View 1 (cartoon, rainbow, N blue to C red):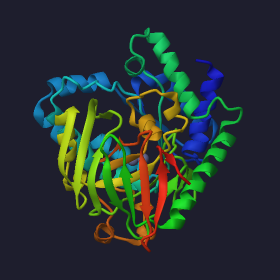
View 2: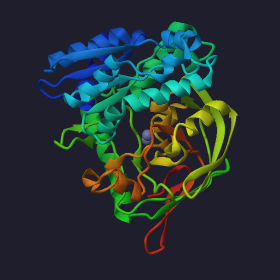
View 3: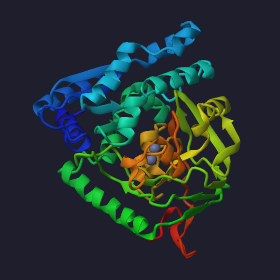
Length: 409
Ligand code: ZN
Ligand code: ZN
């Protein structure tokens, strides 16, 4: 890979992604396979005035060994030092860059209960970190670069090196690094998302009704004072940042108890090193009352059983079927990309920033306003070429929001 292109990508992440401030500490969470790029990110951050840069290495093969061989009790406690790294760094005002790059089926042979237990332990230990990020108190950015195992899943039957090259190409295109001035390209992209947000915010829909030929037929109520967001976000100090690169979505939160009907997945979901495929969820008054999956049923069951809130929706996101990532026709098996190629929902915790006035609300009043709370937040894809979404306004007026998979506005 051309070093100049990588430098451009690293600079885009540090400047536009987390918008690193002078002297600010930075935490980079990176798979060991991505070490070269993680070092480049650290170097770029120092050049741009970072304080201390900490890299937290992840090793998915070692994680698999641990899941296969460690005693059960290991998954019930979370290391104090790691807790301190995340929770201590949010307190110190750090920015966070995560490199999401994993083998989608790394944990295929592992007992799903063990993975679920470890996931729950980690979520509880890192509650403070998660809450700070989900309410934009700290800047954060999730990005990807290829690993061989991941690239081979995306491009089966292709030699290792070629698969990695093809995945690099796809990633760099979707994050606009090939444009002459990526920062300017992102500014333009942000304003196009803003148009959609303004339309949705102006209509103050009380509900959205989704329908397509896969069998999706679901009504999602939106709480009063919900806000559609997209593109960039802001910390309380008005530091602008982009939480996901790429991002093509505009999103808000549903009213926790206001979801009724059935939703059918339109892409496989990579969850905790396993795939859940061709699944459907039936909701009644917000809660999942029935679910099916052709593949990964146990994994889905564990996701839903994480806690009470995992059985309710926490995000409603709109992405046109005709959009840059979707048009690559690549199934990435990585939610960062697949969710940005498709309308999606998330099970679990809602982003409080999607509710006007949430900064001043405590946990109970957030819940009363319909903001779901959970240890998990897991996006899953529902968009198709024939998806239709009709919005209902407070006065009962119906507005076609999506037709044939795309915005009808
Ligand atoms: Zn989303
Ligand atoms: Zn999400």
